[in-house]
Picture 1 (cartoon, rainbow, N blue to C red):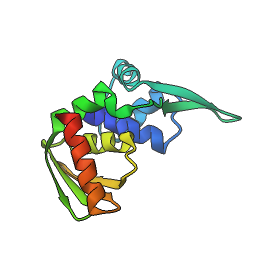
Picture 2: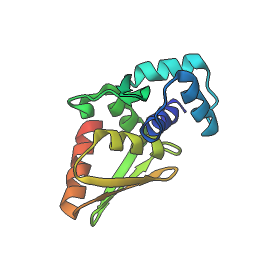
Picture 3: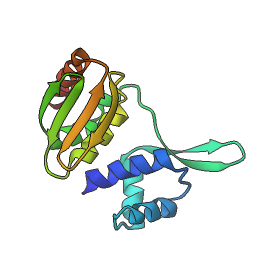
Picture 4: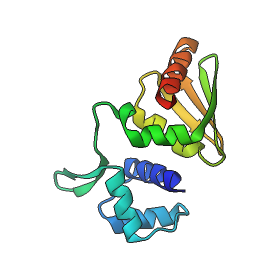
Length: 149
């Protein structure tokens, strides 16, 4: 549940200019996550979110950019805990996850910003990642296998 909630937080701050923890908690509630202010605060800290100021429009939460996000322990943990198998089908990488973990793993794949991945679609336990070619799908699969061990 924590990984799914944190994945939703990342989606929400990309979609909306969220200025306060209370606003974030409200958006999470709308998304079906019952949270306390303490939980939201802890998630913000764990996700290393920062407040970014915009001229004339206040500030909002943003993802702190990291030079090598694929080395981040949190991302590796989510992938290790969720990914069960992978297969390339032409330019699509199909990733099978533990039940209920596909959205969290897909959010991590989005955060990794791998240039080979055009986009990901996640269900309950399956992710489909579109790449430009079969060789890129296989390259992403090898990279993920190295990450998760």
